[in-house]
Image (cartoon, rainbow, N blue to C red; front, side):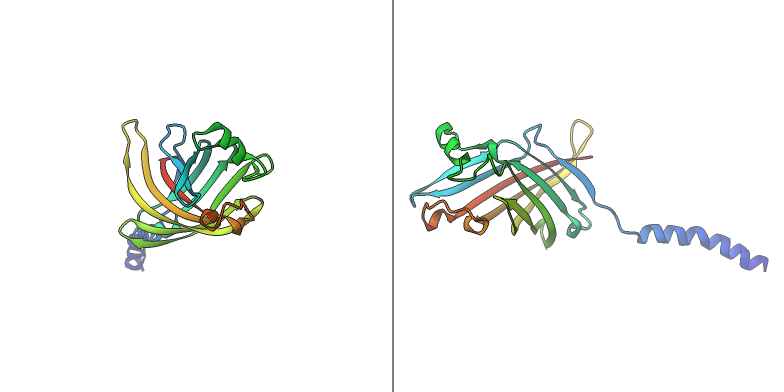
Length: 196
C-alpha cells in the first residue's frame, strides 16, 4: 500500500510535466509597426496599357499573431484609411478619393481579417481572409514570405513578412471604366510587427 502510494506520488509530477509539454503552444501577438514606418501598403494599377500608376496608403493600423512552430495558426487584422491614398499627385489623389473611384467619404475604411493560413514551407505561405471595401466583403489570397524574426536593439522582439495580392476591382463593385487592364490592382505589402 505504501509502495503504491509512493509510486503514485512520484508519477504525478511527471504526468503534469507531460501534460504541459503536450499542451498546444500559443502564437505571440504583434502590433504592426506603422509608427516607426517599418510597414507599408503599396499598390499599382495599369495606366492606359502603357504604364502603371503607383501609390500607397499612408495611414493604416493592424496586428497579427504568429508562432514559427505552428504557422497554420497565423492571424492578421488590418484597417486601412482610404483617405490616406497617396500617388504623389495631389489633384489625382483628390479624384481617386472621390465618388468616381474609391468614394472615401462614404467608405472611409477598408479592413482585412484573415480566415486561414496555408504553410507552403521554406517560410512561404498563402494567407486567406475577408477584405471589406466599398461596402462589400470578399475573400482574397495573399502570397506571404517570412523575412525573419528576432530581438531588436531596444529590448523588443520583431517578426517581418512581405506579401503580394491581386484584387479584381469589379468583384467589389468598383466600375472605374478604365479598360479591362485596369480592373486589377496589385498590392505589395511589407509588414513588420513588434511583439506585445
